[in-house]
Image (tube, rainbow, N blue to C red; front, side):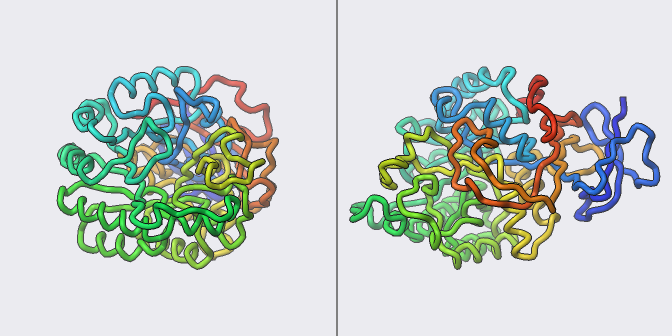
Length: 443
């Protein structure tokens, strides 16, 4: 049966226009003028209909650390935030996703738990290069490596020798290496005078750590003709390097995250582990430059880097930033956070969709099925009110652990419904998640 939805503001080919979307078997089969609305059309008035967001950087932690997060809670939070596709990182689950066996263990956890579509990144660690072809043959085309301690013993850092073994294999199969780009080339014996001081924490992970790591990964990318992608870029001082590499034809791309674009070290309170992440949140001037790099396409897109943990690991009572787990939980609120920032900076909904819906799909080979409202694409939509405001309250957080650096922030943009392949998976005005999950595993 053909389903029809419409609005006065549907984002089609970069424009908000009155339109009707026809859906059949989960796909968009046509886009019509509102003058041709069929009788059974569900009209959303002035709400914006936009492609469902695609978040390619999420730590779900199942199996092994489901007290931190899990597929059910994470994908419900994603759906509530207008996200219809997530790609899970190879850590902090146990086992880490660095072998085909581990991929299969993780896949077995998905049954009856995923409310949005989900795929996996693989991982590169020392001595697992022989595992990469099997994971690629199983449908994984992106692999993450840490150039610095990951924080978990199961996922050790990759030195240059490890990357030199992995990159030719990835290049041969046209897979992409994702890199946590920090090198502790300086200050690795930094001793804090005050465990609560955010300023000291920031000084302990300087811009040079990112710049040096990115310079090295660009060199290796050029040498091995391997596509590389810089995850969660924090330091604007690396932008010039990335831009020059792109100009030179080196296959390097970059992403950044809502916390780097909306939070500032100039206003982070001391001793509050909710704001700790690695690489760290830097100052206002740095933030301005990240936005400009998004504008000129040096940074391709925005993803959450949702990295949750249990409250105890944030050391909130101890006010100890050095021992606190580093990670920001924001999966549910990325749309509102970025839209609020965009309104202040004079950007528009078209750019929002480019940065959070369309461009992330290219990282994981989904650009022909997701991220746009076009004939033949999957009918994945977020239906939202960009004029409405809400305050982020702990009681509304669907992440398993309710800690957030954004508690009590008032933001613009309220998600009314989220549709996956034409079916409502989240409705703000109804009892949420009473139906069965319909998310699929993506190869």
